[in-house]
Length: 390
Image (cartoon, rainbow, N blue to C red; front, side):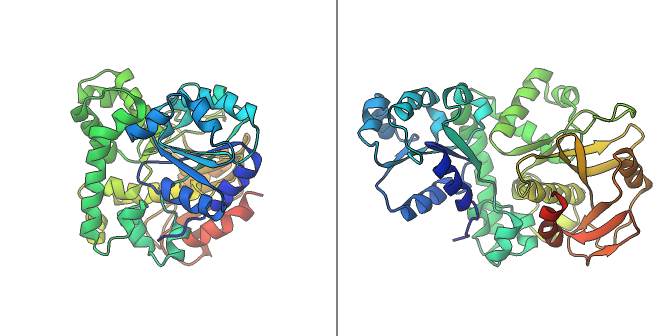
């Protein structure tokens, strides 16, 4: 089993809040991690899976049932299926206030589950469980290339053959479109349009979002495609990377970029099943860019926000890390291990009043291109990142 590093975050939240919400996409290993964590607590555990009708039945009178288990650790899986539970939990928590009572597992962003923030404000801590990170993969003897090709869903990485992983990911996509979206958000979506929409996102991965163009291609309205994007983002499948545009002196791009959060799902959608195929595909550059961005974002501490930056003249940074309103780290992402950097990179540094930036590659040594640009591989950059953000 691939060892996750998020148990410490759960432990810290358990000590601070009566309820902890462990969030992430379906099949990412939330249930496995929750059971592993709670078993180590050596307490009585009650596990409720809200996909099971029998467990939903138990919670018809949630107050009575859960107060019978007030001294147990209660895990409630797929809690977004019964969103009213967030309101039900408030008096239960207040009546017997003790930290670490509930571990709530969810596959949808709290922002899309009505009433969550209002119901449990001050009573719940949030921990997001992403796909397997590069640091976790390397510790488990999974290569960088395998993680990039097959993505970070645990089951996808545990196949010995890339072909088997590829089939698993295609089945996951089919299940997500035909069943999971409806279950997560209690809505009816046209599966064909949803599939076509996701297919389009795969082909524009890493590009600036243009709702009207996509809407026209799909034959639906702009509000409809915005809603579809919101659902995919809320299900932790798509990363919407906002543009940094506080600099009012420049004409700059304000629309966000969109990326697949999991490179393996991107490759499955584009029928890429090997490294040779990936390196020969037009999407290889944007795939690597999205992979690197996701690895960095997963390591960001609280208070640091990710953006991209682009001027109307075409000068661009792939990733800009910002603290408050202060740009901290400028990043360009290149697939070539001996990269060159365009003049636009230096123009961006000047705009943002940054003295230098980084050019991240797959496997290059670290070296200075000049006083303003340092080339570094992704593994070494992730090690250096904490010191850059102090």
